[in-house]
Image (cartoon, rainbow, N blue to C red; front, top):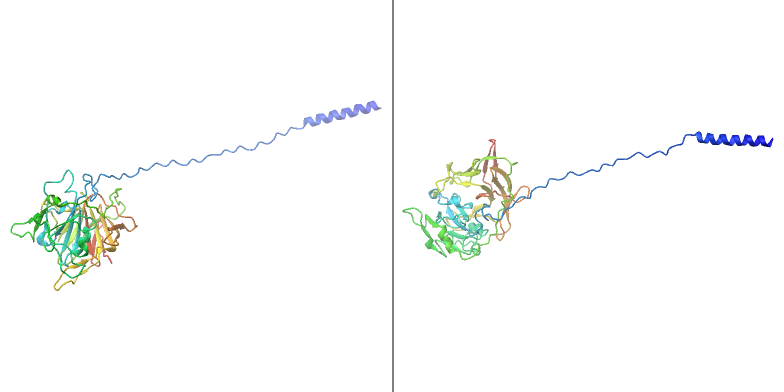
Amino acid sequence: MRKVLSVIVAALMLCGVFTACSKPVEEPSASPTQIVTETVAPTATPQPTPEIPTDVSPTTGLPGNTVYKPIIVQIDNAASARPQSGISYADIVYETDIDGYDTRLTALFNDALNGENAPSELVVGPVRSSRYYHQWIQGEWDALYVHMGGPDSTGMDETDIWGASAEHIQQRINGAGKHASNTEYFFALRDGKPASDYAGIDLIKALNVYNYDPVAKQAFTYYPLQDYADQPMVEKIAFTFSKDLGSISYGYDEGNDKMMRFVNHEEFTDATTGDQVGVQNLIVQFVNDKAANDAPQSDRRIVDVEGSGKALFLIHGKLMEGTWERPSYDDKTTYKLASGEEVTLTPGNTWIEMHPTGKDVQVTMADGTEQTFTGE
């Protein structure tokens, strides 16, 4: 009996073993493979650094002359004085009210006098008198100063040219009045007219007077080059300094990329070249301009070239609004766009119209629309 039971137990155990072996073996579940894609940032295309040349003129930004030895000349702009001689050779010209019915040109010459291409002679004129505010313009450039006298006994510092405005001027060629100096450099520019009325001067010879190294406060920005492509294009700009003077205007000539100057709708020409004067950069600087009342029968003006105000800039025929600021006479004038950035001029000559605040400046846009600007 025990033997039978042993056999049965053994059979049952053997069956259990086979049953266990017959169960499917569970494979361990594998985790799904995760594919990680690395995000590669696009390679930025390096932008070339704008090249800023150093071998250019300090007064025009043009290549060819790096010498700074300028001469500023006061040039008449009365009807009888036109056409002036040599005015198209000026690097920078300021136009200011002189007496309520005429303007005067404060012209800085540098490139035409210096460098390898300087001529043997450069006659300019008619040379006229200085005013107090013209001497503060000269103070930005530290140039040899050429004029034919000026008010010297007005009793007012704001109009007397031998007051505070005279102290910074290192050298003059002055043909009349107090402290006349180097008068031998003047000659009659027109036959039958006295030198005091129509004075000419050869600026190449005038360079001989220099005995110091001039240092300018002012330095315009020309680079990196700007085309102002997104700014509106103008056709014409006209000024109203006075009714007596008539119309001063500039029309944009796209062919040579310049504002061409007109007076009373006639071409403003240079007597030396016979050509119309073209301007690469035109700045309108709105200034306070009032009667001096410094003497009986006086028609002199006081033009504030210190302070701040509105400005317009015409470069490549494009019109931009902005500001000017000269905190004190010891500072230079800073010209800024409405964005607050200092304006970048294009290499070439610059004319600055110091236009009375409150008087209209009329701009005709390229699309025929008109805009009126004042400095108020």
